[in-house]
Image 1 (cartoon, one colour):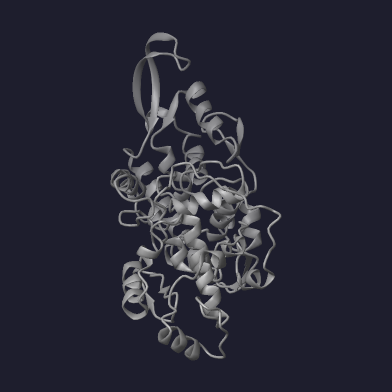
Image 2: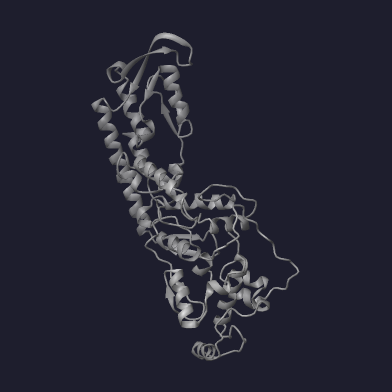
Length: 420
């Protein structure tokens, strides 16, 4: 069957798949000779069926491969009238809404055994194609794309690219084993970022800095499960006929719970497929790691005598960022945080700070500089967990004075700029 071959081609892999997926298809009306360009004129096609032939296709949005479905019934209605396969209804109005008595309309639905089997077979066919596409995407090693945030070019598996986005930039798109059409999903995310649109709430911002700050502070570096545009890219929506509707109902219930939580809470978020991928937080003064910020702060208090909450309680959010980056920089270049003495090894630096009780945050004149807005480590999870007691709904970005002298050595330690 010709339409069958066209559908298979549209789901093939690589460059040719993209070209065939975007190719135009002329679909003939079920009853007359008029043709329509799919998918562009799909809604016009359905409106034509109703206004001209008084035919309605039930649950048309749930039909797996609409072109194949219509192709089947084009052949079916060549030698048969609507009454033989459709439910007949009498309404008191014309298609344009004008009142009229006992006007006859037709409903094509899966009540008819042929229609039921057709829809079922099309769902199976689509699922097989989706699984083939998914298998290709998780095994193809020819993938190459520049990161959405930094200039790193990731080559190899698509899972490596998604892991980079999460590990380096905390952007959650989902686990590779749960996704399909990953290239298209990444393109959509990239377009949103380029047009300054938040991925989660879809608000538009005036510049990239404001967008980035909003997404970080509101925990919006992820996909919103209530946006139906993204249903296409998750395998769960292809497994059963009702999967999408079940997910939507769950998401609505979870959204109400989310409103009671802190903006950066992940307790009830649907599609947060990275919950098991725990981010390890590194101590400011040594190489100890913890997955919990409270535990890390307890470690710094017990092992280094630094009460992080106490020494930063009167500071702003931006000052806390500067402190973390300053301490990280000093430890990285093997200089004491307090006296700035230089050491040859990390062990000798650590011994000095312990003997002299030089664990701390240093003097304000040392860390309160514009250069420490730049992270020393781009994947520093501590920076994402700093609280802002004066946080407001509207994010205000305070630009630094351009006349301030830049410290090139400090910037060379930063692995990420503030560009999206």
